[in-house]
Length: 368
Image (cartoon, rainbow, N blue to C red):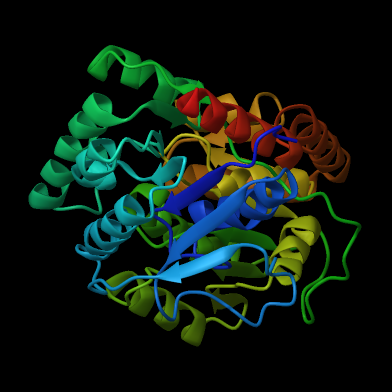
């Protein structure tokens, strides 16, 4: 526990408690942990994006709503601006800022003498989902982050290398953690260890289109469960809706915010396909490991860093996805080896206790 009571403002997520993505999962674990260690914690939030009635919510965490524009391109920037301006007035001991798009607003915090720890996330300006203008915004935000942030947090060693090479800034390596839970009953209608699972946001770099094509072939012999959405509707949502409508062995569950249901899906899957190709350590991949899922992952430097020898790797080709997934499901002994290796690797490298401890050390170092 810190010897002197400190205050931290957390900026750049949808808020607390929220269930949208990796940053939100991090804050649901980190904010209560910091409070327990003696910090005063304020999480800046978007109205309507949190679950205030969540029984797991720690009431000691202060939630502060600000205004912004709800759109795919302006949400992060607009809410980041109003949050940073409010924090500049409140003047906490340190600010934890998530996403380099908020690099534009770091000078406001620095002018008030507020040190900042910035989680830079992935290489956003290389993501296929963003247009030319958005990529330029992220790249400029990254340059400003490199210039004005007190400390950086990188969630993978490969991201750390990129920032050292591209921006000449070192970062504190802090990945994501996983929740280790007792065995859960399978979701109704699904046979344990016999179905194929994919969990992803519907963007091109997550190999979603390729998996949809593979799912049509896989569903001839296996049930296929798809979890996720684009978040804003669109072509990929319509594509999977049509796919599930015409094929009774394909189930689209949309976004699943119930952790127990999601954990059960991972625990009982015969094979989990992880198609994320950019972004460093992916929280869903870490959680799938903690749930002992047999993982077939797109072959990228990020996924290899996280999985090690605990999974199988494939190219982003529907035919290769089909072949490898079917091999995993058909080999029950090999499947169990994959489960055991995934769980052990999650225990060794990806626990929330370790993650929260490292964040506190980074925040204290920024203050110091």
